[in-house]
Image 1 (spheres, rainbow, N blue to C red):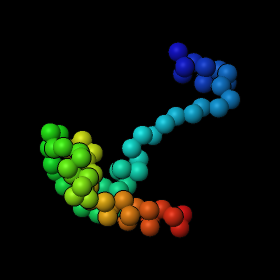
Image 2 (image 1 turned 180 degrees about the vertical axis):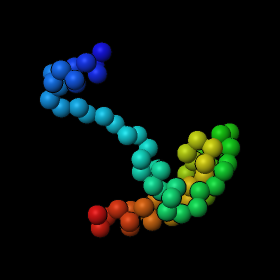
Image 3 (image 1 turned 90 degrees about the vertical axis):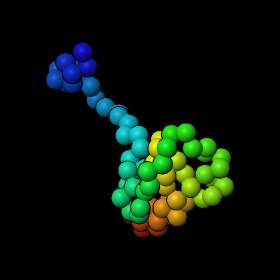
Image 4 (image 1 turned 135 degrees about the vertical axis):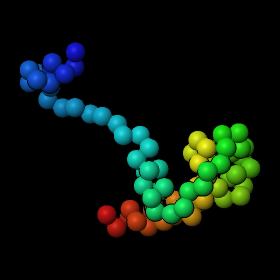
Length: 72
């Protein structure tokens, strides 16, 4: 498998993804609330709330993330 190729030195570059890392950081910067998978996204957005699965994240949390990230 792929691991053999790595050990044999047959791979020059390895690219992976880390989906959702920014959402994990956003959850650490400000309160995230437990909601429900059945909540309607459109109604939440109109109230300034984003849904990540069953988690509710206020828009302001994304602004805090941007403020934290931009100086880096």
